[in-house]
Image (cartoon, rainbow, N blue to C red; front, side, top):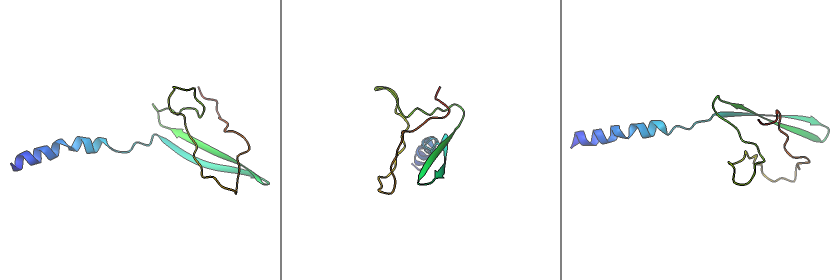
Length: 88
């Protein structure tokens, strides 16, 4: 009985080892301020073999990249997101 329990527990190890969180994209943030306006700069460093989707995609496609922020009376967005370099 003891051996059966041990074998059962050891057979579950691959499931726990495989369930690690993968972070293929490392984000960094910066801003440039001129007067009362600021430009937010998001930079994504993507591991080889991974891809990042555009923020604007047609219906039925993959899930687009989203920038999520809290509403605030302290700021407003005055222009849409710009991509650099342009997606391939």
